[in-house]
Amino acid sequence: MTKKVSTSDLIKKIEKLTKQRMAEQPIVSLDEFRDAQKKIHPEIILVIEDDETQRHSLKRILESSGYQVKLAADAAELTQILDEDSDIHLILMDVGLPWINGFELAQMMKEHRDLKKIPLVFLSAHADEKDFTKAREVGASDYIKKPFDIEKLKIRISELLAENK
Image 1 (cartoon, rainbow, N blue to C red):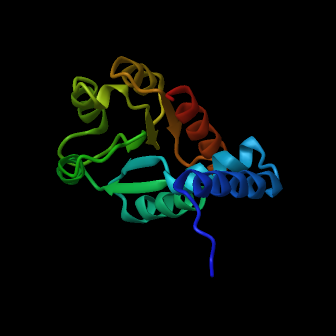
Image 2 (cartoon, one colour; image 1 turned 135 degrees about the vertical axis):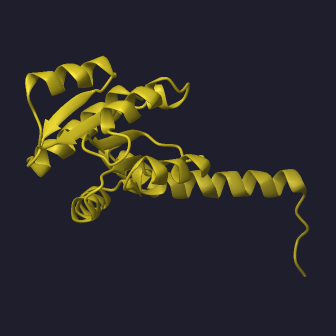
């Protein structure tokens, strides 16, 4: 015959065993915790690039670093992503987009109440002083000349995401 246990006694036993088991777990470093959080809730990076090879290369590179990546080839595809109501954390955008160039698109995005808060990085093969000035005028966080060092790009993305938290 089993002994009947009251609800309060059962709660106490569960709490005691839970605390005991938790105490037996190894301590997790803050970096390990952040890595686990990143896997559970990855930051979303939007890549707007008309060159398909570069677009998909950036996707592979960023996903291998733990980010979730949304892709758009131009402003028209961007509208589909915005309709999905995605929580975007950073935007990488080419300047030389078809129909609406990157500077024009950035200007429109920076006038939007939610999108204006998102760090924006231009990636472009064109990199003269006029382009850097225009990028600053439309509110870009950075302007990186193609071809670029992948590791430096990842570091810059990480810095901007940390600043924007």
